Image (cartoon, rainbow over all chains, first blue to last red; front, side):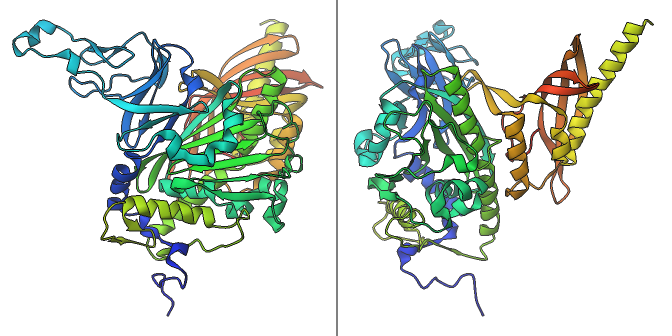
Length: 399
Length: 158
C-alpha cells in the first residue's frame, strides 16, 4: 500500500521533510539560528528621508525602530525602553527630535542615548547611571538604498553576506532616488518559508492567468531568463539577453515609461535573499516582499511597491496601474499565490504527505528547482538539520 | 413642498438607489450589470492611507475599459470562494446640476464555504455621479478603505 511517509526515491537534496514547515521546535530554532544571525531587510532609506524620520517594525520576532540621526546616519535599536521594557515608539512611522517612552516618559536621543529619566531624584540613592541605559543598538548597514539590520556581532558585513547576487539590482535600485508608493501587509496562514518558495520557484507561474499570457515559456518554451545561484542561499532569475516578458499580451502595455536605470522594456529581474526577502523588478516598478515569521503556520508579510521618485504624473499613473494589476491586495497574481500557500500549509500540516519534491533539473531554466535546493541546503547548514530529515539532528551541531 | 424640493428628494433617492444596487450587484457577482452602472468615461478606485509610508495609496484605479477587461477574467482566477454581503449607509449628497457628490459608509461581511461569517472590510464610498439619459451613473466610484489588511486579497471590486 502506498504511504505518504515513504521516502522519495531521490537524492536527499531533492526532497524536503514537510515538518520543517510545521514543527514548533524547528520554528523556534529558526528565530535563534537564522533570524538572529543573518542580515534582515527592514525598510528603504527613502522611508527615512529626513533627520529624525523613523520606522518601526518587527524583525525576527523582536520590535525594532530604525531612525535617521542628526548626522544623517541610519541606526536601529530594539524598540524597548530600558526602564520597564515597554515599547518606546508606538507609531509605524514619524519624525521626532527625540524618543519618549509613552509609559513613564523616559527619553532617548536619535543616537539611542538615554537623555532623560523622569523624576531622577528618586534614583539618587542608588546612583542609577543613565549613560548605561541607552536603547539597545543593532548593526545597521545599507546597500542600494535597502536598510538591513543584524542582531549578531559575529555575522560577516552585509556586502559579504549578500555576495554578488545584488549586482543586477545595484543600478535599478541604487543609482537614482526611489520612492515607496505602496505598502501593504497581511497575516497569512502559512509557514514563512512557503512564501519564499512561492517567490523562488517559477514552476507555479502556470497558476496565474496573467502569467500564462505574459510569460511565453510558461507554456513550454525555453526562457532567456535563467536561474542564478548565489552564496549563502541567495538566488536570482534574469536574462542576460532578450527581455522576454510580454506585458502587452496581459493587457498591460505602457510599461516603457519611467523605466528604472539599466532595465529594459519588457524586462524582469528577481532576486531572493536568504532567508526572507524577494525583490522583483518589472521594467518600471519594484516589488519587495519581506517575511516576518509569527508561528509555524502564521506569517506577516510586508509588500512594498517602489519606483523612481522623479517622474511625471503620467508615469506615476502608468507605473501604479502596472504594479496594482499584478500585485497589491487587489492584484491579479498575489491573491492567487496566497490562496495557494495557505491551502498548501493546511494540508501539509496533517502530515499525511510527509515529503515535498524539489527534483526538477533543467539547466537553470526557470522551472528548474536548483535555486530552491540551494536555499534549503543553506537552511540545513545553518540549522544543523538536514531538510530531508530534520528531526535527526546532525552530530556536528548547528552550522 | 415645492417642485424643486420634490425633484431633489427624487434625485437623492435615485442616487442612493444607485449606490445600493451597486453593492447588491457585487454581492451577486453580477459583474456585467455592475459595470453598467458606470458612465462611459468613468473611473473606479480603491484607496487607503498607509501610516507606514505616511501617504495615501491607490490599490486599484481603472477606467471603464480596463475594468471590463479585468472583470472578464475574474472567473478564470483562483480566488476566494467566500460569499460577501455589503451593508451600505448613505450619509450625504450634494447636487450640482446633473452631477452630484455622494458619501456613504459601508461594511462588508464575508461568509466562508463552511459557514463562518466575519467582517471583511469597512470604509466609505466617495462617489461622483452624473445624470445621463435620465439615469444616474458613476463618473468616479471611489472606495476609501479603513481596512488595510484585506484577508484574503480580492479579485473583485469592493
